[in-house]
Image (cartoon, rainbow, N blue to C red; front, side, top):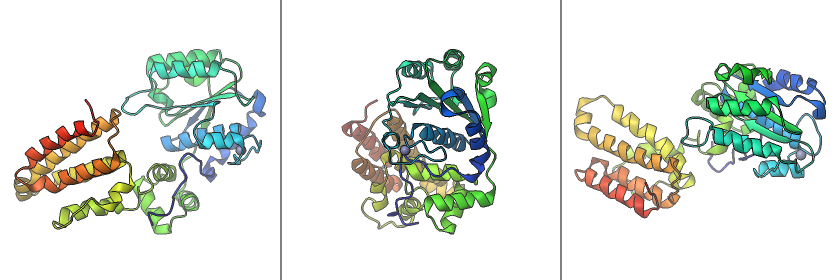
Length: 343
Ligand SMILES: [Zn+2]
């Protein structure tokens, strides 16, 4: 897959997969827009599919063209959705670095639902992977489910609905998504991505056969399935003469780079060959320690410049086999301060 081809437009939605049809039918049959129920729980084996389903429902509701089968993508409502600035839509999910959806998130959602809809219809709240709510958060949401304010619509998604309190589940109409059949999955991903059949097969293998996960990953990280990063890592491993930060590294966000680099370093650490461990194992483990620490800091909100960061990580990787490695890693950690990474 060529890295130049834009795979999926971030922030916008693919066409509804065929296997969503029955659940979409149930949704449409549940009433005309204005007197439809106010809370739905969408359940699927795959979180990415349930999330996509509620995003599609929200987009249909917010499209001002009133086409019930698909959002037009160009009206004022769709444009605001695309840019992530629609004033009548709030999407809740677990925040980066958090284990759960907390009560503060639900409280801010409640305040949002109490405001008047800007575009005249409804305020829409999506809770992605709602089973990740803490008990207190679920309890707080329950109050809104019992006494919804004004004209609002709550769409919850879950791949583990049994974790939700029965009181929350019973207040929602449940829509169940079936598992995608392999042929439908392949066809849908090929149509949405424009990839070759080998690329589609590879992406499906890497996501346990889940096409929506594959689409989701590709929309956040265009190089996800291209192999360009992995090639750059293996060049580091084998090409001792290689100089300069690999080109692919400057084309991804710092977080993505490190997220992909870590499993590769881990694989090196796990190589069980005793000779290898004696010669290089410790330096790989040190490298892992340093990069993982850096990753933790980025997760906590540090935003080092991508280019400087790539150069630093590259320098660290190159130095892994040197006797002075621990010296260099200390140097590297001190440098984090210079990069604006505090903590
Ligand atoms: Zn529209």
